[in-house]
Image (cartoon, rainbow, N blue to C red; front, side):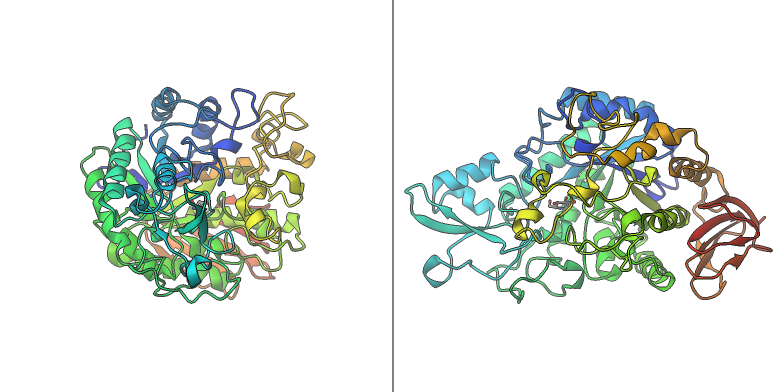
Length: 549
Ligand code: NOJ
């Protein structure tokens, strides 16, 4: 493993690669990616040059929400592997110099979790109901207890049939009905998750991603939130909301931090928190809470110099007082892939899975995506890459309706296609589906476009102009170039409107041209890497890394 600088824990500058396990690589020919498929591709990831992997939930799950509906937090879904496979994965990843992070889904369980089944079977007053939010409905029981909404559309409440067959109480689910919310005021819930955090840290994982972190506390009494009928789950705009970003969520993080601090080896928490601005986000990464957080302001910014600069500056200035490193991310399993977003007139990301289809120029999108990669990897702190972005994969926007699995599709009344289009299995090799993702005669769980034949790993590996080659070179240079390797502070330079230009220390400069005119490179330093071919000038939608010594 790469030596860890004692003064700078690995996670302060790590590039973490998100593995959406079902779509990464399939080892057993069932069309679904799995742990052993990931093991077989560790050499690829080590060669790519990332520092760590974050693996999305691999726990036993009915897969109502792609594994974020967990029925046992301390085991592996048999379709994905076994705990023994995970032990081998951990050992092999560490041998390859890669750290490994798991996903902790603590806001909700699956409706198939033994606790929830007992809560249903036990009827009104069952002790297990106290671990969730069971409430009587309004107006004699027929209307949900309040106006809270689900992230996937529709109300956040579902009514149950009691064991005697009568219509009964309602339970809360901020996500799908198959994902009942846990009540974090219940000590049994708190202790159970202390045990789960320890279980994975004891097993040797290097970090834990905290799913839906702002949801872990609700205002007692569950008052209305004031959501208009049909409102979207736009948590980035919510202030003083009764079910999101309450101050009490921080008690949970402090509790977990005191556990992880007892372990050696710089274990890290990263929070998934879409909250109202960087100051609110900074509260999640105070010194005794989570270490890092995803950066949704950056992810959702449009391809626009002022907007990106505002997201960068806002992040840096909000995090400086708490001493946490920034992270930067362009895509994930929840968002429209950025090659596609950047090829649209409205290039920012919308609320999870609710992007309206719009005309897309994929050539433009890829050009910008490559420039965005150099911007992202030149910023201070850490970065998250989503599997397939290193191949320049676009969103698959024409999946047949009958294969869509994201709950958003049903919950939105078939108005939003949801997130399946960014979850299509990776193309590894060959000139037709399944492109080496699974056995040749097997259909992957989501169909891959024929056009991906030019985007496979095998097609790109030896092509110096490919997106894969660009990422490999950038990740190598990030480890060696002065300014990047030593995580020097960022200083902006003014190269005119529409141009993002900054120095990292005195020997490195990054220039990204988002204007409609070329930018002269004379006097800016020696280019070491550019996102598209460059002569004397830096063309529109192109980025350059330059040495200035
Ligand atoms: C965020 C996860 O990234 C997303 O995929 C999931 O649907 C929700 N949290 C609910 O767990």
